[in-house]
Image (cartoon, rainbow, N blue to C red):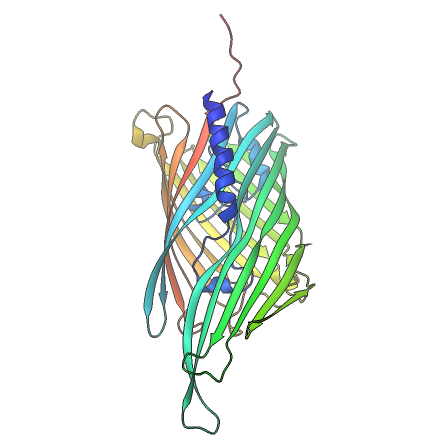
Length: 416
């Protein structure tokens, strides 16, 4: 079996193994609201630069955030990107401080040239993730009695929405590329709530499950203008996603005294209209800097059949990469050093109060000997929420490892 066949076989097996448990990559209580923790299509190298993507073009790694970038691939190259990560999450309230760990499979993607002016990419990654488990005990006075009633409420949720994308890109002019991604969304989000009375026999416990099942097709288009300036290059890009309904089934199951009631409701849920734009500048193939901004119109997208239940979401990202001497003889000459930051407002409210999320990122790209493949180490520190407004401050530390396989496969062999 050839090396190419082995890699393709490993990729297929990997996708089969991880697909049943995709989109379970969070332990944040904030994922209880909306569709959970919203994710981007930024892969490891770009994540280290704050999550850039709209104005980025590279023949070393895949950038699915803007499908117009696919034509940056060399016409003889096969590319594969995959990433995993681990997160240490710290939760701070007014009375306690806890820490938890969670590990995730982040993405798998491939990219191949179709011609000198066209390329194709295929991948799978989470779009949103839900995963939380917490409880609290409340004591309330009993009407007409001096005693208090102890009430325990437990909340947990699982699931999320995953996406498989297929993208095509074409060079339509010397300096202009366009692209399109078709996405298939699938998955389910399940929220559980249980109310019990630990010290009372007169009150009835209640258990409830809310389940949202998603299956939908989406589309986004992208464009990039790339202009060489001597040994430098300027790239300006943008991408647009339509607001489209997410075909779904919404179900509520309530259980009291061993009596179970299941209710199905037809409610409209929509993917928000999204616009993103970015710019990057590369100096002498050594220093790369970039910035992105994106807007998601959640306020006008239907959620539980209504609009204006969610907030419009803005994301700002900045990043840079430095390579000392590409093609140099020393190992360190070809290492990539990356740094970045991002800021986003939440698309959800908690007790009618919005909150923000920010992160700083950094990473290193380690070249593998005798190959164009790189092992990308990605690290991130971020915060969201506050004790004063939401009663919970979340601080997380993330470390991820991504592999950007970049091999010349499509070379015609000459027989002598």
